[in-house]
Length: 120
Image (cartoon, rainbow, N blue to C red; front, side, top):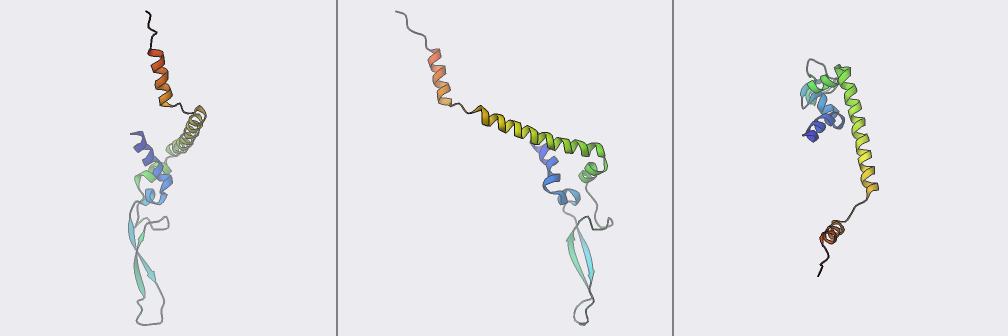
């Protein structure tokens, strides 16, 4: 559950354009001045929404509004990223310095300690 929460949280860093506009597209009209009569004067292109597009054509997602309009949530987002990086580094360091114990050695130690000497 926490992995799904973090991935939706980290999507803003991994794909900022997608979290800002999603998969929205709009029609962009380009005007060209050509002297040739056979070339159309205007061409229409289907373009993905960007920050340069007018707000009449593209609307930002709620996640973008949530993270950029409220300073409190933006600061939590920033600190959360640094806490994740710190926890990852500490965990990696501890696991590298601790070393691995063989499960076979552990089983042999348990087997040896379970045996009681026979008294006859």
